[in-house]
Length: 286
Image (tube, rainbow, N blue to C red; front, side):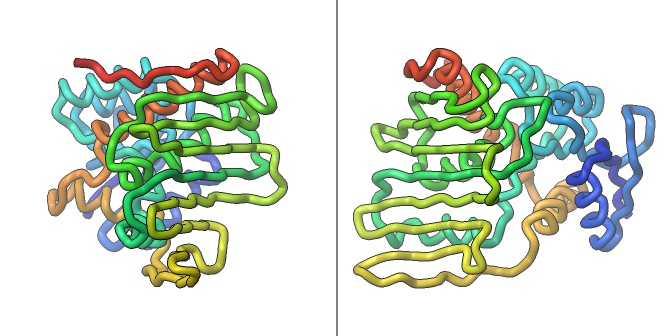
């Protein structure tokens, strides 16, 4: 039996708890902080509290699943990464769509459209938060798939706050990957939820639309083909992966090192938006 501690009381934390109830040989207990004896911890509270809630467990070497965003600033993320490295423990980045069967089918089909030339993403809902900006709330989703799309880290970001000023409620951004653009828009002001990524290659286009009945479509040679994918819920697959990591039957499929590309891109987007669209280079330490 694997015993997990769950930090968080909001709607998503309740969904996580219900999903854990469906996994065999797994039990969970609510946590407010360190003290309980658990095999792993899931942090799903307010975004700004993710790092402070996780750090005591990370420092103790307890495997931690941290919902997106892993942190709400690059400095906090680097503290978390350093703590994980020092303790030798696992941090599992909660990037849901890395475990979405439809997103997996989308990524697997990318070679079908030839070398990638560009991509776009639209992320929207009508649920503003008061503990972060739309940049850190929505953009981790498409950015968690960007490495699969472009196979290289982003080099530069430009962004503008379209509504909301310094804490954007709606933002437009562009990342450059060896000169290839990834244009992103995220909004908390839409009556219609949306999460859609379109990749354009030399031989066609590929669309992942998480809100559509048919989520993955390949367009090539004038033909549109609906691609098949497993119907399993992404959260079930993601939480099972975390439990298997704790049991020692698989490596960490969403490690903190891979999340760093997402966090550095978010940081550059935020800094560019604060500078009214000035380009910001995404620098990596030597």
